[in-house]
Length: 577
Image (cartoon, rainbow, N blue to C red; front, side, top):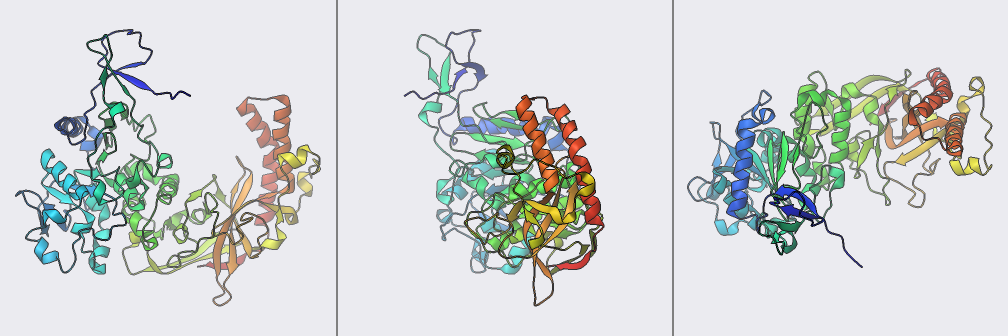
């Protein structure tokens, strides 16, 4: 059995060396990321970014720009002291790190605050903290922000105040040092390079070296591997990476540089330029400060989908760990209101989030958040489809009270009053139409004429419960819990479906609580789409656009008729809590 390796040629000066490997002019790989070679490389990246990157030099003029953090670690005198209430603008770095399970992490408390103003003992610092201090000093950065030392950890008031300013702290930093490879403070920032990534001279040649290609750094949050990049699987780090103007990722094999304009690596294998005008910048590197992009509702949906994937140590931090991004997104939505993770002017469509993928085990809801907010769920969520609101759905009132700044997303009271359809879940049929059942003849392929379809024949095409009660068949419809469905969105151009939420009534308050997401269709419409697909399979059709147009011609009339029927039904006054 053979293992295939991708080999890279270093300093190749020949058109064809006859080696059968990739010939790229790549630099030599240092044996450790602690080396002066690595520091010199980082300094070259910084110089290029500061002097030549227009997108990195031009700061969006936010009202709070250049506000200095309340506390910073002062490294200027060869010791480490905690400075407070600094009035002038200072160049500071931030540290992104995993706390891990070690409860002995050095931190500022009410008891240690006074002594730390004089000296923070070096021997109390974790390896990650010591490495970060060394990196700053070698780069000439004299001030560093570390959460555990710059926030009073046993003061709820101070923690809340500083958490609300997280956007300023990271976005106004010069750069963020990310201990990307380490799952706790003992891992540090620096690492030794594995021997097969170190260049070796090819026998018989004087100037040709080869090495195995190092791992590719992920472009997207969905590509992350827990074991390779433990830091990037922390929910808090998501906004830290999105807010920071520059990030130095200290990985297991090399250092990766990311700014708003480019990505660079010591190996050269992870280099990439981001073209904001003509290309797509991966969201792992995209900065939320790019305000024009954030006007799109899709941008926020994608942000929530990516953010809801990583792990949170404390579920109470669900919206707090996203507060910095919400604060920046608010700038692009000056007349909008942030409601525990969604936006008022995006109602009712922002209610159409769904759990994805469906969890195998039941997870309890987070009761501090309203049921209509994705923050109430301990799972990853997403929005699927390009929906338009049904004409029968009207947002009558949003009652939202919060004792903390709005971007913290922590309401003390939250209710949405809707005027909408309320359909008993038992009156919506389960969908039995599939490729298999139609191909086998189990289901008749006879399709009801458009003018003859009835609203009583509506079916649930797809059901995703927020917290599955039936672990054996969590997506089965109708669910044993009963309840009602509120149709909200319609797509008559692409999916030809309808989207809504599954709710149950709270008999004490008379209000409704969300418990799931549904896609609604009709037997005739599902058959029409399935027959079209089967016809394509039989003909072996590969052309996409003509087929799409044919599907639109057959399915769109059904979708429009169902929309007309739904919008003609009597609506109810509904309060969602």
